[in-house]
View 1 (cartoon, helix red, strand yellow):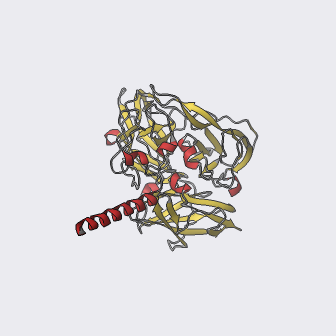
View 2 (view 1 turned 120 degrees about the vertical axis):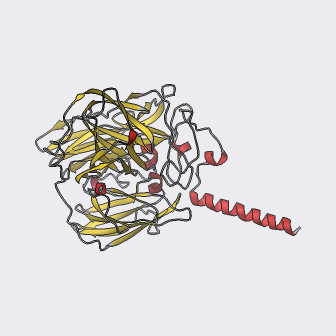
View 3 (view 1 turned 90 degrees about the vertical axis):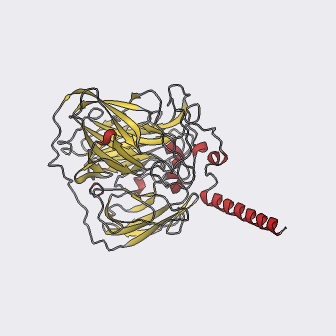
Length: 504
């Protein structure tokens, strides 16, 4: 009898622990993986639901590995350049519409409802000339509110497109963007409270190119020819090839087993035997990517989030967390016609470059240097922020987001040093991509060490690994209230977000 009682007590204790873990992870662990339901499969016949969390991504919830696609290859879509409605000597006018559409991702799949800017999926590339004022008429044609967040732009908070500036269904609103920063690859996406992750997952993301006259002279710059963007995302498709965010959503970050590049699966791009500029954007909800070339070939990183690096850096791989960007140069001049070189993310093909043309001379990068610097100060810390938690219980400094609370006040024009600490949790923790609106900053240290050369440029998002302390230097030049948050979109929506107010 005593042994039975002990077993009952032990069983009850075990069930209690499991219930606590479920509450910590959030209501969606994902239930399909816990119950062994394979109703959401991979159109490629992979559907593996195991592993270490997706090749380098530390996971609390469901583990989904990336898989190589068996989908027939297709040309890499190049986002169209948005043509201005009109231009004057000092201003450019655009219209950007958030729209509902349909997209067929698989040759033998159904069309699925998606969202896009001025189209069915993703959006155009918008040029923002430095020194000019850009007016954008933002139009919401969705069935719900959205916002238009200009990720990486140094602009006043009232134009930033954060959760405090919703554009209601059927509403139109004009934003004014005075462009006074380095040439860079930025992007735009929605940021509404409670819907950011779902709207991005369904397709809302577009490109912003800050341009500066004369800055491209030593670099490939023919858009869509030798200068191309690749927005990389991962998605989990239903068996019929459709997307269902509600089925795929995970409170600790929604990931998928299939890579898409510029909205397409298993893409190819024809190149000449010359230098190619590739602008990489991690547009995923939660997955970290490590980009490399098949065969271990090296490439040259020339820019990070906010513009050119201090000098070009030769690499054989570059890691980007959600929201981060990198510009790289790939030299195909030594390849033969017919060669195929894969751009890979976590070892899985994203896009295949097919060598088609004749040899050209490579660009001279010796004179490539950034043109501005931050008024750096010592690494003495002004503020310390702690990122912590999992699932529905994520916090910054022990607090979940409150739209009526100002968490930090800073003075305009003052440079501050922040230390961002990613405190490990009971499951070991996961990488948090930390993003600040309205600024570009510098990474000063990682755990007391100088950052690698390709992290010494302007940044607006920085990956902080479990147990790591990262120091950054920031100067706030625009007044108003801005957001700072984890760019794991599900963590952001679960409360890992705060507000800072810049005062005169």
